[in-house]
Image (cartoon, rainbow, N blue to C red):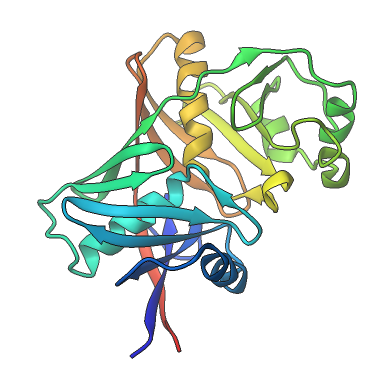
Length: 264
């Protein structure tokens, strides 16, 4: 029997929404070139590779073009696979050893909560071509290790924006989170989208790593610690965010298995 690859839609409770990720639970470590080739073959925003260790799993994430140091939705998908396919019992904590340190996932009813490092943003002066690449004016521009964080004037602008991806690629930092507060009486606290042509992904459907940045940003502006966030891509996804200060942020989402295949 070949290697089983499971495709999971993360940050959603229904198939064909949220952010799809492929998950491979390996019996032994594999080479970087092989993992990159598999990720390119899957052609999803992320493919996750796990190898069992004594008290957890080594976890690495690959886009179709590069390895990334942190990925929220593929971690969520990985935890979902470990519990749903019997690698862990549902009362066990999933422990992942990654390039971003130890990450922990807990199953809480229908939701999976991830313990991630927070990513603070600093105000910056953006290149003049950023507004042209985005095609909209913005309120403010910050920068973090993921890319630019740009606040727009309204939720409508976030939902309607159509960037020039070729121009984005020419920026010193080609990856951009756009965000805004939601309309009054919305069930969500803020909305966002994440454009990542520098990672080989024009738009990521739902991005855990972006919410590691958005948690601290919106805590400072909305003066609260818990949020319900919506990433307004064409697929869309819901993220529960809890950030009480310090260096850790808690993200929660749901996940659905949609496909299982065998790599021969």
